[in-house]
Image (tube, rainbow over all chains, first blue to last red; front, side):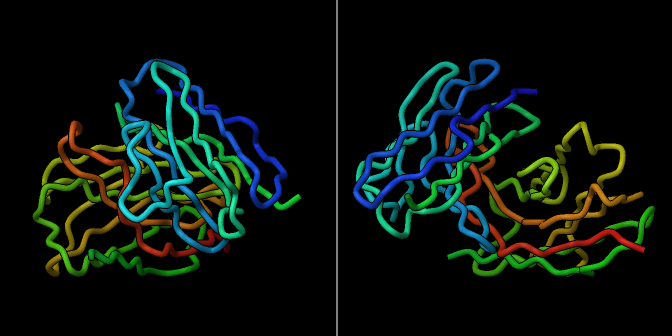
Amino acid sequence: DIQMTQSPSSLSASVGDRVTITCRASQGMSNFLAWYQQTPGKAPKLLVYGASKLESGVPSRFSGSGSGTVYTLTITSLQPEDFATYYCQQYYTSPLTFGGGTKVEIK
Amino acid sequence: QVQLQESGPGLVRPWETLSLTCVVSSDSISRSYWWSWVRQTPEKGLEWIGEIYQGGNTNYNPSLKSRVTISVGKSNNQFSLKLSSVTAADSGTYFCTRRIYMVLQSRGFDSWGQGTLVTVSS
């Protein structure tokens, strides 16, 4: 199985801050990497796929980058609605696996 | 826009079988998607359970494979999950979701149901 390790597990930030979340995979996965946002009581929402492609309708302040085994999700100017938990996920090979999540909290 | 809706018992007794159904609206289950189940538990976070393609091919998470069956429902446009011999560790929120069949075109899980909470308890 490909293990996905996210860091940090949580962070505190203010509106307008730049936030970066890192996801490390235990092996390469050819950029078959997605990022999701989840708010309490809701299903995850797809933000980024293919490591760097923004899903339709997702604000441009979100961006993904990386290759090989290290990937990042960046939010350039944090908005109130962005306080949530973020997950990475690889869909390169079965079993599909998720990171442990990064909770973005208000400072 | 596709909609997915999970349904099933919210309480299951230990060692019994958990059964859930996902109804797909505004899209056909016969299209080229993997129709999947993902769960979220306090112990393991988000965990992929398995998936089915066009009522035939299935992929299961090896950690659950011996207990899982995913099938296309008897009624049109729905698919189902059965998880046998459940324990408290299987308690959590279960989501149905989908991803494009062709890996090179896949975007990950692009649509999700709202999730259904299942508690395993006597």
